[in-house]
Amino acid sequence: MKPIWKSLGLVALIAAISAATTLTVVHYSAPQPSNALAWHDSVAVPAAYGRFASLPQAGETDFTNAAELSVNAVVHVKTTYRNSPRQNTDPFFEFFFGRPDLHYEAPAQQASGSGVIISSDGYIVTNNHVIDRAQQIQVVLNDKREYTATLVGTDPTTDIALLKIDETNLPVILMGNSDALRVGEWVLAVGNPFNLTSTVTAGIVSAKARNINILNAEMKIESFIQTDAAVNPGNSGGALVNTRGELVGINTAIASQTGSYSGYSFAVPTSIVQKVVSDIRQYGTVQRAILGVQMREITSELQKEEHLPTLQGAYVADVLEDGAAEKAGIQSGDVITKIDNTAIKTTTDLQEQIGRHRPGDVVTITLLRDGKTVTVKATLTNREGGTGFISADNKASVLGATFAELTDKQKERLGINYGLQIRSLKTGKLKAAGVPSDFIILKANSRAIRTEEDLNEVVRRASAAPERDRVLFLTGCTPQGRILYFAINLAE
Image 1 (cartoon, helix red, strand yellow):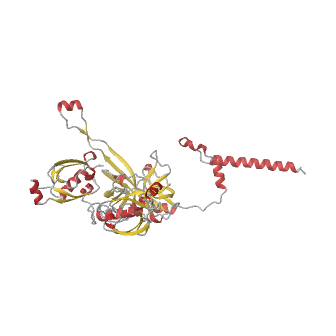
Image 2 (image 1 turned 60 degrees about the vertical axis):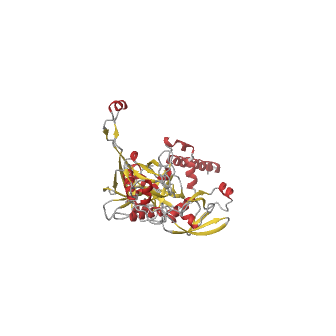
Image 3 (image 1 turned 30 degrees about the vertical axis):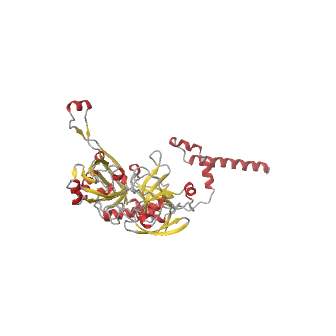
């Protein structure tokens, strides 16, 4: 019989060899950091694997059904851009002999993104920045069928665009309820990053109602769903779906210092997408509702400065004259805490809730004033101050003004026989250019302006010109007869 110490020593030796073997397998089976991600070298990968391996394992999440339900309804959007012809001139030759009429055509450029089929008869949602200024838009389905798409309408304030292809019986993604999304819930991003078609990535909702100041449009609405699902260039316009395969957002942007995915992506929620798409299909343009307030985010500093009872809500810094808020009795210094039955915690919440409405809608607003709760009703307006719908053909609406034709008495007094006078001036191109609120437009881009239709036609033509030529030259006078000139950039 062998001594006990020898048996124990043999067992210990075997255990040591087994442990060493186990550690070696874990180390070499773990993903190794690449040269591009050398900063990961400090992470103790084997120790992390060992620690999590000892924990109880949760049930696996199966994304296959959601992927199958969505991947065929996400399309590849290809766009073609052609720059304006450039003049090939020599400055010395031009000085002595004049400007020769020599042009060369700039080569066409191509870009791509994604889109989501939302109806079986060919309506497709994508991002405005995917198709902005494109001369041609091609849509490639997941089964490789290819179509030329028509641009139905766009909304730069939410970065949403609607396309149409001539086809029927197309696969669609059902609209989900983005309001029901919870932070921590699994979602899938479906799109075509780097021209890799039908790509599906997974992540969780890491935040909601996120404002990242990425849109440049006036009256922009940013209330993004933030996720950590991998999104890269080419994913823009693609689908963000929940685990039931329902569309809950349109992937739009990433937070990155390199241009590629580095941790966070952002999607426009379907609560906004549905309203924008419905307006474009029904009216040709988005019917944006305006409350008429300037807001500030409530910070600890603002709370102390204004002696506010809460950090939640949207602080009213100013109330616009004759706007919906002023008519409802809202005052500077009020804190808006509810729109109808929805709590308002930030200015982004307020923007999103108002953005779901149309001009003429009546909303119930709950606010705090001097520590007391006040409830008012406001009738929302359009961007021109009225409550009616704005036509898609009214291109002059970007000027931010309403107009009135001159009376015979005004014409006689000024010694003119035509002209279009500004009746009211709000935020827009004219106000930004310093145009007086009672300015009388006589000519726009050398064309005599007698009616608003005349002005609308000039603005429409200027807006369709190459970007560098999108300028509106106005000639007119004040009611006192002083002649004034303005140059307004419509491309900005």
